[in-house]
Image (cartoon, rainbow over all chains, first blue to last red; front, side, top):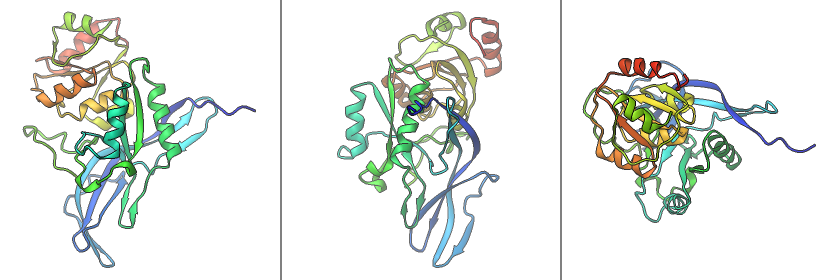
Length: 183
Length: 111
């Protein structure tokens, strides 16, 4: 029997917050998603040698994708969000691919997995392909396409000045100022 | 109805460079996460948000155009980024409510 040519739709949409917390002892950064009420900046707790403090939060959402043909559901609880490459570092693999693909009217976004003290949790490449398929299936690909890349390709995360597509500071009534980089 | 028709009918001010596109519906939200979860390809997106993050979000969902309501000033970096991605950024001094009323009266746009 031939494999299903999946046609994806978004399902199980959960609105919440991506929370960024930093340990002021070892300087590690961790992120997680929560559907709880607005996490309070500055909230602190101790976990072993680490003293975690919430340094940023962003209204966000999580979702799964369901195939409308066969009903298969692919879960994306490991996806923290998408980053728009601003071309800040010429030798970054993401920027190199961005320049190559934009010439073909293919726009790239970087899929971020969650950050943990012990390292980055990347979104598996087969899921990146599913996300790419999903966003292209719902657009006029004769005009342009989307390609989702892994954040593993960012050469120097600490110097990345890409823009997260999150609702950080978006609802302020203050005049717009450049958002501070998260890393 | 396409973006050019809409500009003429509602007196919207085009800010970015773009090619006219068919509009197949309207999505109203000031939250990017809400747009990414709910907007459809070809939708007109109404918002008061002007940060440049609206451009990759509009691009990701393949919005036909973004209309900035209530006369909010749009930063030049947002306009330049939108031009690069061929995303129409339109502005109006009308509040969102009034613009929605006018859009509702335009039968060719579904909701």
